[in-house]
Length: 371
Ligand code: OSB
Ligand code: MG
Image 1 (cartoon, rainbow, N blue to C red):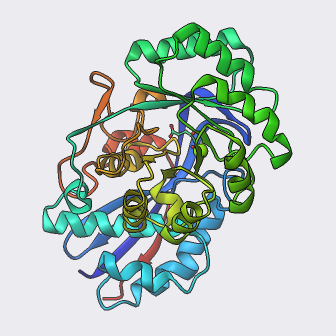
Image 2: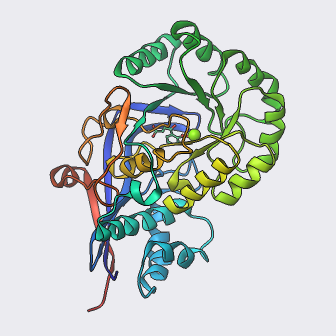
Image 3: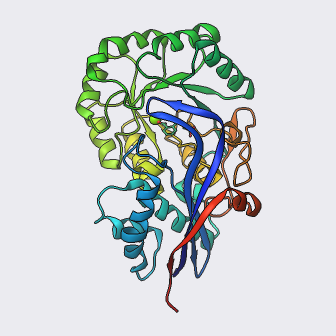
């Protein structure tokens, strides 16, 4: 496989409803897609983070520069940019997992298309469809939250995740439990909004039978998460703090988490995500596939990961309509609360020409092979 061209497309797609978390409010998905052309096939990927470094340290403009100036030159220097060679070639660049994931995934898509193999088959997925959960943002009032949850349940979502922060935690959780009952699979995500000094307060959540509490404390502080886990019955789940399979192994060994949210983008791509899945499965630690409000280009490959045997908890991969009135790919739709795992080669989808043209704000060529 020879790399011929790499193009970056900035896209901006309005969200159907603002999404508020402890770190900010999003009203539109502003990111870029990578489009790679090789001598055998083309591939697509989506950069998962936002224009501002509020969820993680990476951000759109920074990632573009890192890919253009540091990652792509290393990958383009390979005799053949096959997926297995890409991460080792980029390893001397510290961090920047989301940028690395975007480049690796576009090349993986192209390589799998050349083989005619789906990502699901390549990863070892074992399900044709996966149950869909939904991540519900922070609202202005409890009645507003209850309306939203009711609507999502009516649409068929099988698990609810509530975003929480200090001042929006025990009461919304209590209200959702009282209204929808103890059988509702329910979990919360704090996106690093608490400190260990809040342990007694967070312990009040133990009364509500939550599946897990996601990333309650600061990113990368495994020690503090382990101390918190000692004081909670609710399983701690890590998101932001897990950047690699080695992180997952450390977190499990320290009992800093009893569940792991795997986001392929956050860990440098699907190969490392699969390794995390395997480490967790070997330790009996449940895994689920998180999301970053992706367009269909990011959602399609996440569905393949969510279909691995160790993904025993329902993920955040929701239907396209939960995010966008119109997506840049064929939309993913719910059937009985499930989404289909794409079966066609590569990530299993491509941008729709018209929608892509309308949502693209600028394009630039990052690389062209000399002829
Ligand atoms: O912490 O899981 C998170 C969205 C953007 C950034 C971080 C997170 C989220 C979500 C929504 O919770 C997941 C999704 O529906 O894609
Ligand atoms: Mg999270």
